Image (cartoon, rainbow, N blue to C red; front, side, top):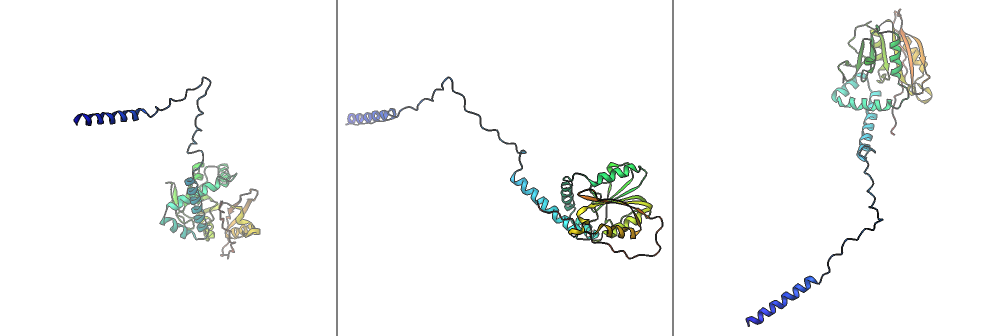
Length: 277
């Protein structure tokens, strides 16, 4: 009986060994012919900086939209309201300033460059007040003493204040500059402040976006603006409307001021609202 069981086990074992050997071995890898070439390498991966990603595009779009919102607000509020707005969240000023620089980078010529060259040509002895200075580039570009004012100070040389109420003494500066900064609805107050701090014979230099003075498209008549500024106590020396993007006004404070106060009719300057691109 035991012998019969051993024979059956051996028989099953032989069948199992035969079944294992019945599967054919895996085929060998194909031999390369002598003239065969290695497969071409995969195309190189594009670097991350070669094209903006979808996330980068969305961030840029959001930043641009935020700039337009802040810009529109600044054109439709008073200086003290704008000061309060940025005091609540100073980061918004950085967002605005970054968007502003992006817009200016598209201009073929910068009005501040013209003003800087004008100041250099008149000598370093002139004391200058820069209203709405941004990054204080004017002060960093000339040898003159420059008082730089803006709503927020991101630089030790910049004084944060409402531009209708600066800390300067009356008759203390030779040049007052407004480079694209007559933004508030109370902009005549800014010019009144410039008149207060300027010495008799002092200069008022204004650069503004040209569309704000296009009466055919809702802008102010530049002649009305000239008349109102002269009624404030300035004399118009020259103006330059040749640039496509901006215009320039050069005034001097009259040495003899009229005794009586005159009601001044200021034109409403058209807000400069940037379109979505």
